[in-house]
Picture (cartoon, rainbow, N blue to C red):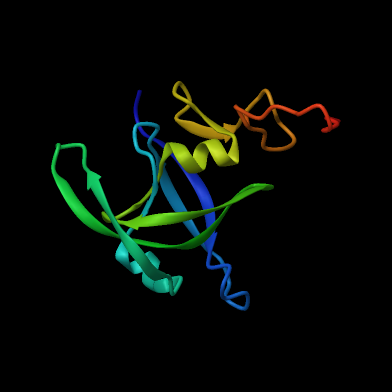
Length: 137
């Protein structure tokens, strides 16, 4: 398939006066989280809230700092996530890709907005059922 990348804007929503930083992220549908290197976490002045045990591609398990919140923008789409501090490049995992409603086009090695929802991010809220007194619009 090759490597697909996405240009993202990252910022710390707790520090509104701070300018966002532009990063080139490796899109990895086999990963779950947003992973950022230590220098990006420091640049955004993110604070550690907990630790996450992460299994890397080579099968090794390690405890990593979990920081946040991180505001991610891709074009007109945005989401807020926590991030694992790990590695030497930004990695965009499946959870933020789902939140942003992005898809990977393997033949072009690109990340793009979901063609089914080109104008806005969409998602599924399974398990929700409107009760008899609830009006669904």
